[in-house]
Structure formats: structure tokens, C-alpha cells
Amino acid sequence: MSQPQTAYAWFARTTEACGDDAVALEVGEDRLTYAGLRDLAERLAARLVAAAGGIPPRRVGLLASRSVTAYAGYLAVLRAGAAVVPLNPEHPSARTADIVKAAEVEVVLADASGADTDPGVPVLSVGPEELTQLAEDAAPELPSVPTGPDDIAYIVFTSGSTGAPKGVPVLHRNLCAYLDQVAARYDIAPGSRLSQSFELTFDGSVHDLFVAWAGGGTLVVPQRSQLLSPVKTINNLRLTHWFSVPSLISFASRLGTLKPGSMPTLRWSIFGGEPLTLDAAREWRAAAPGSRLEVLYGPTELTISCTAYRFPDDPAEWPRTPNGTAPIGTGHPVCDLLLLDEDGRPADSGELCVRGPLRFPGYLDPANNAGRFLAPEGRPGGDEPLTDRHWYRTGDRVAMRDGHLIHLGRTDHQVKIRGHRVELGEVEATLRQQPGVRDAIVLAVPAPDGEPELHAAVGATGCTSDGLYAALGDRLPPYMLPRRIAILDHLPLNTNGKIDRRALLEELGRSR
Image 1 (cartoon, rainbow, N blue to C red):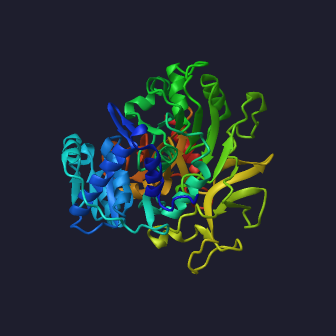
Image 2 (cartoon, rainbow, N blue to C red):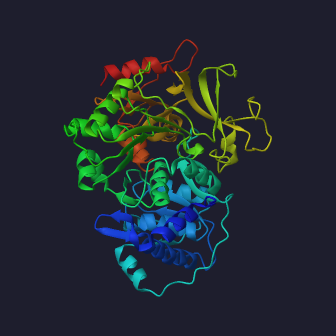
Image 3 (cartoon, one colour):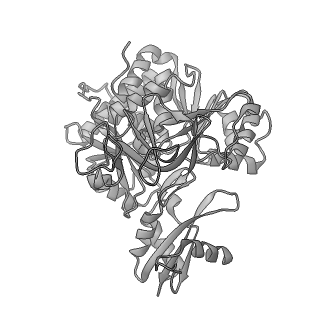
């Protein structure tokens, strides 16, 4: 039997098989079967088309978080034949408006948390009362929409080094190729209960949604506060599958709840978004001895993940790595991987480049493609149109050890903060835009718990740290805000006249 060709078709196929016999979505006290979720998505899709003037929209913003509207809305946008543009209600309204404009969003679907935001386009607000009314309305007449594999499924905006977020469009064929690789990987069936730890603006959420719905499992949505107590949440929600950033292991460990055998319901534990230390993996594995443990790696541009590493069942067989982090494993079978040294030659260690059906078609703004792709033969790409044979440069340094890839760091100034991708250049550019700031540098430094946090230093006059914090808070999401901002008369320079990041890091450390 051929696999579905669109994301919605994966959900629809499972709905035909499960109908009212399996729960598809659980948010608090709300539970929807597959048939019930499909019916709600159809009704929301009809409302979206009406809100867009009766013509199916091309791109719809989804300004919602951890609500029935958020997840039924995701399906509704796809059912309406549009691309989903996830928006976070907690992000500054100016940033949301910028993304809406850059993505050419025509209408925004919002839950109660985003109802008061003005994104500059029509907003369809659907809170609990509206959901109740939808269920009482007559079934809508919604025509079939000719969505195809080469249409955009979703657009995620990531941090951009130029000071503006970058739009990453992922096609239906990219997502379907991903599901072909992973949907059957985790033994999901009716009765499986999968966590939804990521916000919709983080592409790991797409894995949760469609891997769950491809296999007939239940997508179980913890509230934000519950994520800070992972062990309690896993047990209270009776989760069988967990997927999160590794930093949540640190939360559980500091709470003292990560005790041997403390998570008996877990059958699968998956981590991604940032390096997983082997020590953290051992602690989690002891707490969930009945769980398989796996690491997924991949930038947004490669459709959630392009490599995987599954730990051996026997911890005595686990690897040792030079930096104490888990391997990122081997590429998914459909991916071609290439490692290039500093001179651009194939090597066993260097920048990881990837191509294949998981690779996105290029940034929403083509100007962002510059320097990010290599021609099919591995040389730097010129001005020729992108093809499926072009390599995407991940910017990650990796090495091949004992048949598995080890992540060694970045080739640029991109960092991961609690799993979020942050271009230090975007934070620096926003600081430089403030009156009185001559220059700015942002560094990632270890916090007391060992996780990275951002510290900034500016060469400025007439500024205060509080004023700069307020200005950044109006433009950047919370995870991109520096923990501290030091105002200096001038930033230290090295012998080449460039800002000396090492000296600045030492200076900031002394003044903590």
C-alpha cells in the first residue's frame, strides 16, 4: 500500500482505521477521538475559508498554545489547503507581526491566549465557547482541496544572523518522507500515549503530532508548568512515549525525582534539540528501565531530524565519547551525508552537509540561501537554481567514530538555549539598533546548572541595563533574552582590531 502524499492524508488514513475507537488528542479534561478531531478540524477549516473571504487561503498563522484549538487548528489549516505558520502567543507582538508579514499570512487562527494580538491581518478567535458552538453547528460543506506533495506544509521561523528571523518552508513531500522513516519506528498503536512537550513554533512538535497520529496513538498535551516536573507529569498522564530537549532531565534531577524505576510506564524516551550528556542519559535510563532510549539530530531545514542514535539496551555497551555527549548516530536511510574539512575536502571530521528528500527547498527569503548550500559535486554553490542534489550546510562540526557521528560544536555563532536555536548575531543586531549602543557582543556561558545562558556586553553611552532589557523584550522571544547585559565604555579588542570574545568572556566571568 502506497504511503500518503500529504500530512493531512496521514491523519485521515488513521482516522479511517480508528474512527471513534481510539483517542487522538488529550488536553486536560478534553478528549477527542480520531473521528471527533477530524470533525472539529473540518469545521474549523470551513471557518478559516470564510474568514479569508470565501477563498481558501494559502498561508494561515496559528497563534495558539497547548489548547484544543492549537492542535485541531493545525489540522484545519492543512485541511483548508494552506500552509501552517506557527506563532507563539508569548512572543512580542512586533515579532509576530513581522513574521506574519514575511510569511504573507492571510488570516490568523487564534485561541484565547492569542485573541488580543493584532498581527495586521484578520483574526479568527476560537476559544472554549467558540469550540462548543462549532460542535452545535451544522456540518460544513468543505470541498476537497488539491494539496500536493510540492505544496508547503508548514513554515517555521528560526533565529537569523542578520537580525531578522528566517522562514523555513517544509513541503508535504519533505514531511511525508520523514514520516516514512520514523512513523513505524516507535511501536505506536492505539493505547500509546505520546507527550507533546514542544511549542508549535519548535519543529519537534510536528514529530509529536504526526508520529502519534500516523500510528493511532494519543497525543497527550501537558501544560507548560507540568513540563518542569517531568517524572510527575509522565506518571500522572501515564505516558508511554516521551520526546523533549535533554535540559528537562536537569529539571527532574534537581527536583530529586529522577530515582531508579520512577517512570514505569515509559516504553520510549527520545531526546533532541541539543546535546544529551551520557551522564544524563544514564540517570534517565535508570529511572525508566523499561524504556528504549534514542537521540534524534537535525536542523529545521532537514525536516525535524536527519540522524538517529539508539542506545544499546545494556548500559554496559554504551559508547564513550571525547566530549561526554551521546552520539548523534547515523543518517536516516534516505539521507546523503558529507563531511568537509576546513579546505572543503571530504574527511572523517568536519562540517556536516546533507541532501535528500528531507532537505527543505530553500529559505522563504532567497537572500538567506547565500552560503548555506553546496553544488551537487560538493563545491560552494553559485547562482544556479537549487536542485534536490544540492547539499545543505548544517554549520555543525561532527566526527565519525566507531561508525557513529559525534557532534563537536558549531562552525559559526549559533547556539542552543534549552533546545531553541539562537543566532547570537540576531540578538547583537537588535542591541545595536538601540540608541546609544555603539557595538554589542552576546556570548553563551554556562549557568550554575551547567546549561548555557546568554550574557551580553555593549559599548554604549547613555544606556541602562533595564532600558536595554525592556527594548529587547519588545522584539525578541523570552529564550533569546540575555540573562545579563553589561555596559562598558568600550569592548576589548585583539591584536587584529577585532572584538576579543575570549577576553570579554573572562571579564564577564570576573564581574559575575
